[in-house]
Length: 489
Image (cartoon, rainbow, N blue to C red; front, side, top):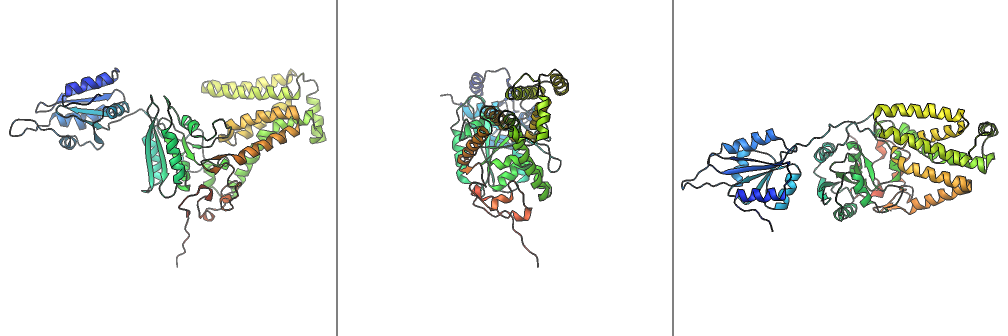
């Protein structure tokens, strides 16, 4: 077993053998008494100027000699000399390797069989900006970034209480990624926290690049279309969910934070809903719910009405559609499949291609390709309008886009095969699935099943802030009181 000795030469030789990469550098110097010192660090991940001014320079001027002429160097003296606020003594070889690869520096001193870890980490990170996936007109505009410490500070800035706890663990055999559990002691559900911790500790994988990998391991139902963990890039939303009694997960290298338990109604909510009047927030949420149903069912209803129940449409609309599809060579189902396929291809191309080329591609696909297909008699105008309106409606609920796209295809398949009966059958199956699905002991359709009258005040309809005196009861928080209204005499 590799252990450190009191010889700095042997220790450096051992560490360079364990860390042979060329970007692991060593800076050697001596004190005024001639004691050999060395700093082991990863190039590009440390603040060299800070390391030199607060560590190397003070130690190089250190003169310490007793009456017998022997040098006495201890880590207490080193810490007082360097005056570096973030340092700790480490004895384990594995801990030293982890700290150096994580961006910290290891200070070795001749005559000492342990190492001083100096936290002079300086990693390249982007600035804290508004997240592109969750833009709000009103409210805070800060967003998480890929640095764990920064994200923890953004949460701490909003929850200035000693009850806010962080617990960090390492996941990934090769990446050694930091994953942090975040909760409010006495408020968050302890059972949920322990279950998440146990699942995180059981993950055995080489590489964790993003929180989506963690989400895949934590989901109770691995192949479900509906996600069972909340996702957000906004620290204010994350902190608000923690304050309600949920448990949060931050992953180093990912700007997306996870929360548990998750309710399906959260997809209909926006951070801006809490900074406008409750009346307008309720209207917007109902509008999103209606738009979601339109996005999922409109293409299927259009095909079903043409093939099975034409009398479902008004007479004037029926005549207009009949005149538009009279010379179309494709069947209604195949035509709708083609238009939906073109929509998905244009969406993927506009996202993957460079920014300005993607904008041009969207214009060409929407105007030139669509107009040419209609003029050539290959596609009908109503089909393009239906698919375009369905696509716009789906993006009113951004967190449901992936699931909604799959469900729209499923409804279209059953509508073209079995008509309205197939749509009703699929809707019944999905409803049964959602009624039986839960995540970390919380049903996805809560607070509607099981019914919680108090929790309905912040579901699809939002009540005034003074009405939300208690935390959501479905989360089973020990600290139920959220708001206390006291009257002054």
